[in-house]
Length: 97
Image (tube, rainbow, N blue to C red; front, side, top):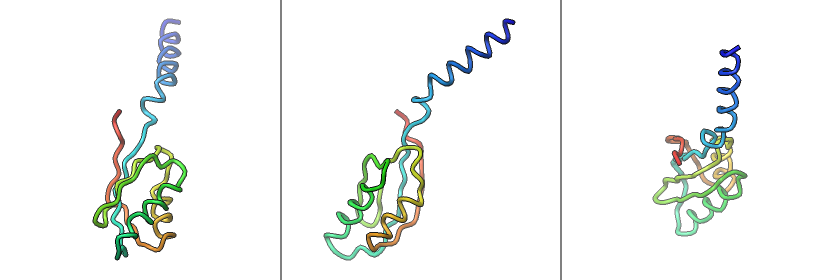
């Protein structure tokens, strides 16, 4: 009986701590085809339209995007391609709060 209570308590603790492990991610992208000063803002605007994007910054052909955990990397790539640029995922990492 004690083992059962401990197991149930452990499951409850895990479920209640879900917000602490269901966090954000940072996705770094290489963005190509940007040729003028208006290109980076256009690509940034396209990224911000993706549901779950918290913030993004584009400098020198590199984009750093903070997204909710459920956002797929392909959604980010497709958003940038939809704006007329190319994109490749360079890295992804979990944000530790």
